[in-house]
Length: 331
Image 1: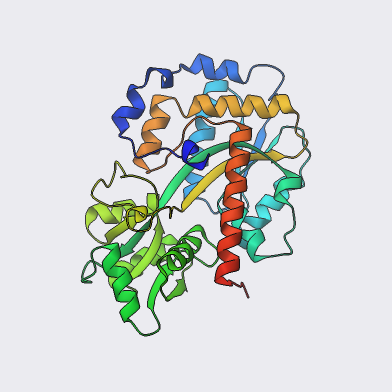
Image 2: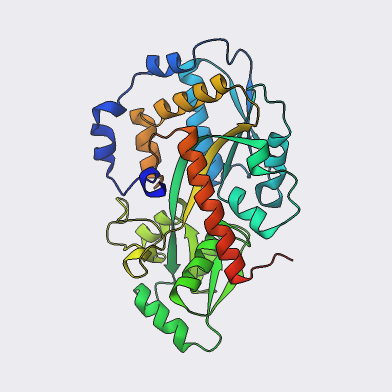
């Protein structure tokens, strides 16, 4: 099911030339016809402004507001790896006027913290899987390592293992690193940063030689040659970086994505959930939105709340297994 939901590396031309994707704004407006929404809908993004999730949320909900003439307002509530904002949404009235736009740590945090302030399955209703982004394993260009097999060999030859950075403890990139370490059977020392920007800067400067970075944020650096993209953690080849192999070409079955998704409080009327799901399925088919998401290396495709729930269950199981087998602790 995960493979069915994740967009394979497709060119912008392929996205925009599919007739079924060229839905007019009127179709999107009809998708949300009826009594809902008749007042402002707050969209809680539990991450800082300008980050990957915030950027995609603003693209989608700005488009939705324009097409429906309804008001969707982004409310950033960062903190505690997304848990603070998610808890606010989970405790909100299920009246259709609170939306949560969250990402991968929603399925990672419970594996690391037994005292979460809410329960994903009891308190939140999946609506739409809106974005799936592979990670990039990047390196300082001056390093001799150019391929994943070379990196694995270098790790085995280095006493204590290589230092490899991520955008933070418990992040999607940290989990991608741990999944890679377990699959390759190597030692690696996790070096957490406060975000993908500082990590990329240190890889560029050579303060750390390797790191796992979000595919949207690091693609520009890879294209510019300021970092070397050794591989990505998606499937197939990326349209934006066609010469960069997938990690699964060396380690079959190893894939790790940073995803974004839309949720509503559990108990929100089914009709409202379906209306928002239908509207978002239409939004991603709009040529301007499809083009913008392709530029950001964001994969998406039509899906239902049930599809998204199945995806979440698989992500939950995977990251709980990785945390357990890696004996990962958050102090």
